[in-house]
Length: 503
Image (tube, rainbow, N blue to C red; front, side):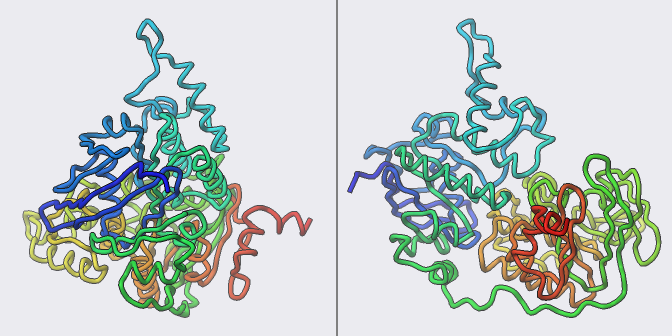
């Protein structure tokens, strides 16, 4: 057995609110894919950020090639050939792709001038390796979430890393893109690279990884070959208990139409979109990346302006020019880009939850905030969603990604909407938190709130939705309900197979 390329010894981390990691011992061997799983807040991302130089351990040591090292910052990690593909995008919106790939390590000519052509050429090579058709000169602000994810992977590959840490790399990718990524990861392993693979998608871990470790409440509770553990046992070790069905029983929506789109068109993005959303219905929006699902949600929110068509709420036409108009009409939105558009990580839990609804807490003539009512309401969300925080004044940058997602969902419903649009609501959350979010959305529907659920996970669409709209190329390619809501039918419409068969 080869010596460990990376070893952590008695690593602990305390952010001042209690230990996040507790005496973790772990060895990583060269040329293996190590799966790292655990609930949100279990310490997975914290451990990886210590290896990437973003956090410093409270105690313990890190060894690389048998030597104790201090990874003071990401530059030191890069020098040790350790790269991190983060769960949240760390890209500069105003810069093109190639500048982001080489940010902080730009290629230069002998004269010291930036070698832009060399950086563009190398970026083009990396994108081709990932089978991504993307212009190196395209600006980040114009990219889809999946394309941004691929740019993050290119950043890590650009520096010939020996250890590649991938934190939830497939949450924004289609099935096709995931297959490309898996082939790349397998190829990198065959070339001697070591991959630390964090994912809440246990099927991926079972399929891809050689070995799996489980963290629970900051402690390592399992370490063994993936072949020796099943998916159900993985989930049970993560949560420390037996798990039942992840999806709640579907309710029965009413007959009343609450929201309607008629012939909505956004040039080059959406074409002739029409649908109805009933009271208490969970209406799924499925399709491949680029099909127009998020763009439709942004049009409802007034973030994109339509050239034709109308939106109606309770039979009355809406004039939705900006998000404030949607909020006033009782429409709320949970963004797929959590940190880009959902939350502010430097704000506290309380300030994030009431970010949009703050006016509702201003009771007096002078519009002063009723702090007591605000605190009581936010504490109710923390208790209902099991948000792991010791205080409502904890800044979100110190919470796990899954707990950040729960805060973002609490913000979306604190405006008391009658229509809730949720875009990738369980992105980056563990199986237990997924169940909690599913139950909550289901309860909202049973209370009469109408939900538009956008998801790339077909199991989620099938398990949660009463009806499903399948989008392709900015159009609605088909509507499914009842027994027709299957993975095969969704993919037939999403890829155009159904349309070709009918022609």
